Length: 573
Image 1 (cartoon, rainbow, N blue to C red):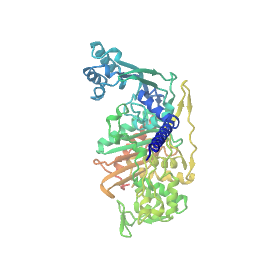
Image 2 (tube, helix red, strand yellow):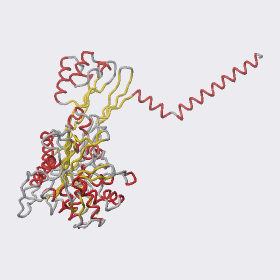
Image 3 (cartoon, rainbow, N blue to C red):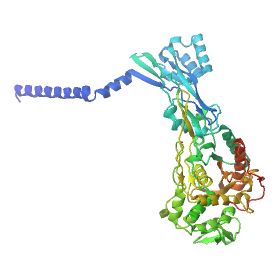
């Protein structure tokens, strides 16, 4: 190749390289300008968001459940503090070991978002001793969330993480409403170990408040009763709810194990879960009145109709259905009173599976209730196409389906209020920053049962409490008639029913003729002093319901004094 040709090749290569370089520069300066600008800013500046105060949460009578209190945020310049001083600062501010020492050359470091009065005193003492330079620390205004009643109503309230980014309960559900504008700390890096700190405070306008449907007096009664049940029966856990059947207002809701939202990080994740709405289970015989409602609505059973309960043992294919007592012929009301599995299964065969499934769906099973709390579980009610073998019989008495304690309470509320299915709620009113309250509209109920059917079921549900062979005499109250039903279910463990592990429920309402409260109590794995719903859950129901009716000043039934019974239950339930 001649010298001239080589010159042209080199010149062409240089021109091509220049074009490629120009194209790349154009791409960086034009197409990717914003991307690289953002990256440069991220290296030159850092922003820390300090949450502002959250709105106060109160119960329906105005008692404070959650409040924000003034707090201090501590920022430090590690590069200007000795390692001894950084270690002392970690201890004074309650930081984890190494949080500051590992970043000894950093220009700025957030030490803690929550420095209370004692923390401030400890830090200032280090400054006075000369261990930490005064101009190497920076205080900013912050707020801490406090729950004055500790663990009370924790599963409704939830909690807020220290940085305000994550929450549970109503703190999460109404987070956007409760939240106010916070403070922004903006650090500008001017050289390797030096930077400028800017503080921009949020709005000083008070945040919005929230009024719950909870009544703190009722909440205290419920939680105390659950704790006593766990101690008395050596149970693994317990949960309960008190519901106004007319409006869907949740007057109390509690689960055990519980946690203190002031120190939520010290409790296992299991304790944070709201078992009343998040943990579905096979509810057992509390579902028998629901099956009966489907039969009555379909006109498949008359009051005089009876079935043979086979002396307590009935062969179905290769399996046997069992009752805990050898009953003979029973009508539907008696089946509910003595809690016969065989009886309800035989009656349920009078309607096709699709009718049974649709009837239970209409009562809210297998779907969310719509309560204004996060993480609600819809439970499981498989369609008839998925039923096999004895599944239809099992569904009729509360097995092969799962439901939450809230779903059970809602269905019983539909019987109590004449056949209307309400939407449960925990927020009663929204408060504006100026102190006014704006009541939340109650969702219109949906008719799911004929009033005649609902009234008949309500009367039949006195049988388990008052009947000669009822399964829940210990649910009776002095002064008010009670309607309710027991449910004792063996738990599924590794795909098999464990005879040694029960979950027991009593669901009911009072007073009978003008129900004001629906109460559902569930106790998980009782191990002593009885293991059936009649022995374990029914007395808790009686204690809670009796105290709540007195707190609400509900007049006693005229001429009615029903003493709490102690006779042995006639069926397992």
